Amino acid sequence: MLKQLPMPTKTSSELWTDFLAYMEERCSAAEFQNWISPIQVVETNSDELVLKVPNIFVQEYLLQNYKKDLLGFVPVKSNGDLSLRFVISEEQKKQVLFEDQALRSDPLPLNPLYTFDHFIEGPSNQFVKSAALGVSTHPGKSYNPLFIHGGVGLGKTHLLHAIGHAIHKNHKRLKIHCITTEGFINDIVDNLKKKSMDKMKRFYRSLDVLLVDDIQFLQSRLNFEEEFCNTFESLIQQNKQIVITSDKPPSQLKLSERMVARMEWGLVAHVGMPDLETRVAILQHKAELRGIRLPHKIALFIAEHIFHNVRQLEGAINRLSAFSRLINKEVTEDIVENTLGELFQQHPQKRVSVENILKCVSAIFEVRISDLKGSSRTKDVALPRQVAMYLAKELMTDSLMKLASAFGGKTHSTLLHAWKKIRERLQSDESLRRQVEIARRNLEDK
Ligand code: ADP
Ligand code: MG
Image (cartoon, rainbow, N blue to C red; front, top):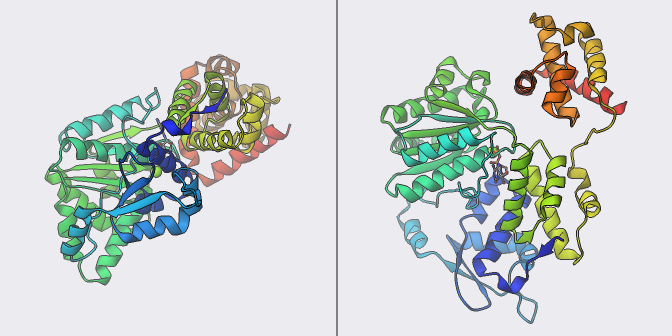
């Protein structure tokens, strides 16, 4: 059922796209951005792969670290060597000559696969995607800043880079800079050392678009926060576009009031976990990128088991893709389960029931079950009730409607709201996290 498409039909750039997808799983985002994504394919019709690299270091880096991995993707000569040739990019050669220091003339460090075309839309990300598109069409003129927040592996970096690609394509003259918060801090440290802070400030303040990933890493870095805030204000005042991603909404970040207020100036948009259908669509899209045909039934099976994180969905596809290279066999659900077993989140179709959840939560939080099912909104009851609803959605597979009605006839949107609330709170509330963990363990061991 799951078949590798025949190799010879692949062009150089398709092979390279496969390799990129494969590498993404194996190296850190920073490594990928710095070393892998600057490499380009030069299309040829011979049976060697020609790669354009910005400099010799990138070439050496690739060969020293990933020669073996390349064997799976690059044509091989009769003596077993890779049929691979490198050319150094001319523009880059020139740029290096004129560069007095390392202040970015390197290519925009954007992941080539993180474009809008490769971003699958669903109810959980429609809003944030359309905001991102708006910003890309009219940088500095629609929402400023655009603040994107959501859990790990849900596509924040993907959207940030997609904005970068789109602006780069449609507004060629604009000066775009995409950086992680760690990168920004490192820049400051470097420039402080080299006593070149003025230069750095000039650089940042001359940008048209600043894309900043993972702002949560600015928390409790007071001096850096101030520098960031100044940069931020200066750009916003000139109507220069800023996009920020974070694992929490601004109000939950431990940053100064001034900083939080600035980040709330524009549009704050949440990206959530895609629903089942969207997960299936993502799986099929990623499979297609890798040249494997994934039957709908198998995609559905995987999507039902992996529901916390899109990155894990992608991991599943990578394993299946490696697996389907190895064996030339029909892939059944059993095989999928064996290959991906550890990736599958504990799927607790076990005996977790709303009754068990209520008992467990009532014991941990010392509230009565009847209160949990009731509608009192006092804090002592409301929080445990939300926790119970959260656990029900996390641990059970029944429809939201069915679950909600088991809570004394609540609506499915009440349940969803409770789940979202608790999920957000868990990110910052250590003691709640512990309580929920205890409940979860208790329930799953039953
Ligand atoms: P985050 O920055 O939120 O932790 P990433 O942007 O790194 O997450 O996304 C993790 C992986 O999931 C990436 O490979 C990305 O392409 C993929 N991904 C996330 N959401 C989507 C989506 N809606 N469509 C396609 N791929 C997605
Ligand atoms: Mg990210």
